[in-house]
Length: 125
Image (cartoon, rainbow, N blue to C red; front, side, top):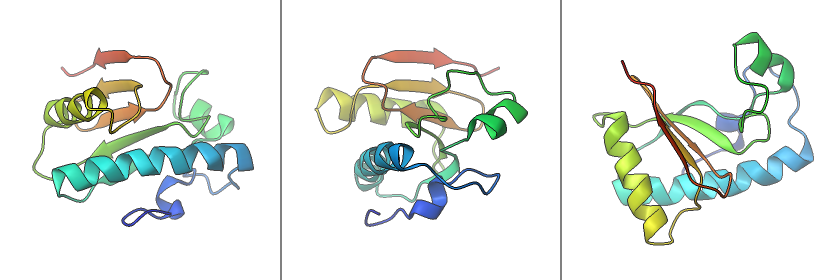
């Protein structure tokens, strides 16, 4: 899909088939994450990306989750804290290299989505 990301990394963990409209969003998301990876010069691990409604509900995700639309990924970059990843994404958005969207900081991962509007939250303990 991109130089460093395959579609398999973005699939729903339940094993269901990704709808075509979701796939379009996943491609946009993957391209933005490729920009981040190139900037950081480090691999990015995707913990969760697309989630079908059933899987999203089963794991306690919010009903209007960007993951259900294929617009979000929860990511980890080895040896970088979620706050450092958030700062890098914000810098790339400011430069116009990544799409504006949501960035959530958690204890062990960073959420990024391409919702087009700015949303920020910090759920670290």
